[in-house]
Length: 99
Image (cartoon, rainbow, N blue to C red; front, top):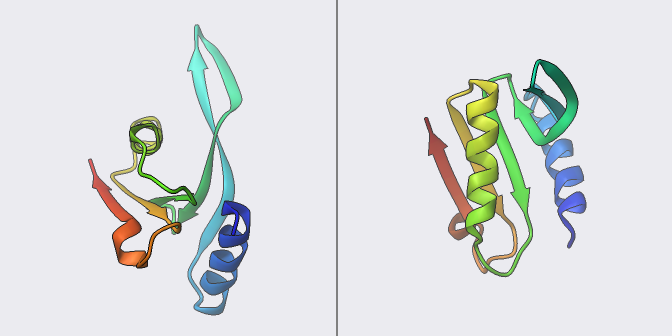
């Protein structure tokens, strides 16, 4: 499946369980005193505390980790999960980040 399909399903599961979340959250960046509103987009922001980045790729890529670390630094949040659904067992595709 595509990342967008996993995102839809996960959003549905969060809703059913009463977990507060926002999808496709725009994160601004300030560059030379100019606020770029749509510079980054988080897949999920869970209870305004956890960034959740979804992937569906055959192999782990360092760029995905760097992406999540950038989101954490820019947002000031401390916790993030990188979840790759393209693995034999889901637990093998989950990577936790704490700043």
